[in-house]
Image (tube, rainbow, N blue to C red; front, side):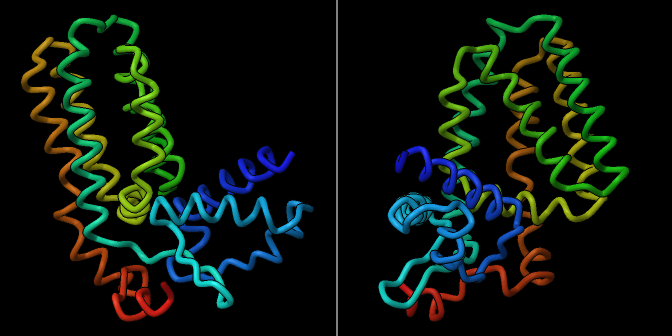
Length: 227
């Protein structure tokens, strides 16, 4: 029961952190989480320790727990990690691609267009991830996709933050459509190049995101004092 409770708490808190329902720098009350899930504090601590290991919370004994601010050096590492794995998967995908995959890719782009029209970054994010996961599913590498999801929390928060602009959503859609066209033509070298450009574009948006939300990003003095 403790492990089951801890998993449920971890999953919900992580979703809230990734989708910025819990803001960077916001305090997390262990007592309130315990009350919400009707559990002791032990499974809450277990969940928070996992989130701490992923760089998503800051914990200080006897002082409390906070959602970590976004660490740009960690974002860079996580972006490199995802890009290296996804480029390899796209290159391998040539051996597995089916016509039905293109239909599914186009379906998720249609969902992205709906989300962009509604300026719904969460719906867009989910459709975006569902689209990218097709490459891992088709190549039998879903465990790698799950590893990416688990280990790139800071990068994922940056992606959600960047999706607050309709222009960014429309640019993502255009890049996805170019990628699908390259796959349709079976030009996998171009597909890898396009995927590299697509997954690297966040670094060009960083300055504007910091300017718009400076309180979301790591203040070394503040976070080190808490640690």
